[in-house]
Length: 525
Ligand SMILES: Cc1cc2nc3c(=O)[nH]c(=O)nc-3n(C[C@H](O)[C@H](O)[C@H](O)COP(=O)(O)OP(=O)(O)OC[C@H]3O[C@@H](n4cnc5c(N)ncnc54)[C@H](O)[C@@H]3O)c2cc1C
Picture (spheres, protein in one colour):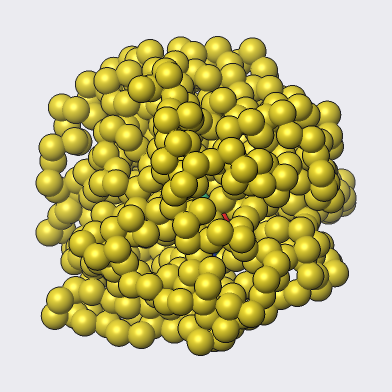
């Protein structure tokens, strides 16, 4: 009887943690992203299904336009206050698939998962995508994402061509050899130059992969990666998981090609799983006094037990639902990412550790990835061959917590910049203007191109919010979004940007040439 009562009590207390996530009800004209920290009112939302609808809407609409994909950026990048919002999620048809040339052409609202379902029967695989399959191709191209692949780098490397609707409603086709300036600006351009409508991607073979892992001190990781992973053509996926809270030990996880038979029969991870155990594990790790120890000593060894053999597509079809908490009302899990030249790995790690420990950051995990140099995007995050540090952490949602996160985020950005690195733009917007310009030294070229393609600044906020033109640190907040973020002078914040863009336009010379000079980072030349 007592046991029964205890069981019932335990079940009742963990139920709020493991129940299915509930999205808060929003008014139909509020657009929010997955973090739920950025509710932004727009004036209208359209859900086009044809390119003509998009071109027509862009041509006719004089005011601001914002673009949303799967809404997994986390800093309000998808919406602009008062804008016409183009929700791309129904613009998702697969237009052409050629197993012979291993290429696929899709509408930009299609997700990786949709592509996988189509190409898996032909035993083909997406060449480069993120770790999860829920993102739209348009949203992924706009951040120039990367995954856990070995030796491939940013998504741009797998794009054969794309089509984009520009501010005047014209449709342009761009590729590495045609309209290259637009190609280099649109990829990684956060929707600031136009709406990506179609993309043709290079596919690769779906192969069987075997997982093997190795635990090592973090001081040995870089050499291990260079000796055993970097040049290995058989290595398909690789990441290094750093254990909090001492950040001194890494579990290197590699999936290599194999001829062994699969041990997991599914070709893709079955959709619509509940992921209750994941929610429980993340909760214990982030809330219990010894949660991180339990994760490291108990959960992690169970999770990485054995050497399963799966299909590449299986491993690439993970669902972000496995990370989604039951509620994001009082606390939320967020991502940040820092890029560091491979040779500066050992210089960055102690700095990162100091910042995270000093600020008592509730880190759930840090995953090390690798990327080759970006082939030419104007807002490149991999200006050289880099290691990426993907930090998954938990924070409260109140203003004080946000402010505190802002402080340590800027410290981490500073640490990355100090070793010639950079940071990723789809996450929360805590960087200073100066940090933005040092991390993205070709931003002025991007803005010069934008001024030519979008002179009335229709696609204003998402891009401008990412990379502000000179002087914006001093801008006064002309309009406040209803976000819980509170602007502070010299910081990036929504509402500064339209005003800043006007300043930028006034201060720029023809075609942005003067600006390139003005804004080149002295630190990075
Ligand atoms: C759990 C999680 C895991 C992640 N893992 C990775 C990872 O492994 N690697 C990685 O690189 N990133 C990762 N990310 C970041 C992710 O790649 C980006 O947030 C990406 O933008 C998500 O795609 P989306 O379709 O949700 O885009 P959205 O968030 O909807 O949009 C992102 C940006 O693209 C613009 N945009 C969207 N569609 C278009 C279009 N058709 N034309 C023009 N502009 C458009 C939007 O205006 C916005 O500025 C992760 C994010 C989360 C939340």
